[in-house]
Image: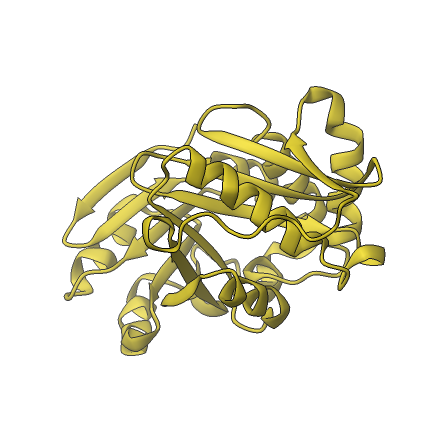
Length: 255
């Protein structure tokens, strides 16, 4: 279980034990939304992780040079865009368009098809980990996303929805639900069915469930250059609300 701590002045720090094991180094995540970057710099220096994964607002790019004081290397991993949907204002979405489409909560019995969907959906996919050459062979996006998906199988705060077309699994969507908002965490569609409305229908089915449960807001994020899903989000009532740089601070680097 990750340890979450607000370390002051717009800084939230989170232990990342799963990544620490996978990369064989101490990994800690930081999100900064304050005005003064010094508390962020101080927190990283005090925590002394081997790898600090830091998110900062894109309009504060000048902070990069401040972070160089507590890193051997600062790497720009990606630009994350965050969309939100006001469910109270927008109401429920339209029904799925394909009459052969069905969505249900995944259970332990669905692990094999989910693992297969993750493998096909994310083959060749690049995110901020791929930008860091220090991770080398320890970086395996499919294994990481499989673990992430498995951790969302349930019916409480974490859920995984499985999409089927004609009774065959074709996509999945993981969701985290809290009283203030719901978040779509990870999703994928069988590449052979991309562009055929599976993702749109799955998004509608999940949103309908969240709206029915009274979730006032749903957020979702992706890399800036992942444009196809963003077009779907806009059509389904999401709006662009935030953007962040993901930075990797490599520390204790052996030269």
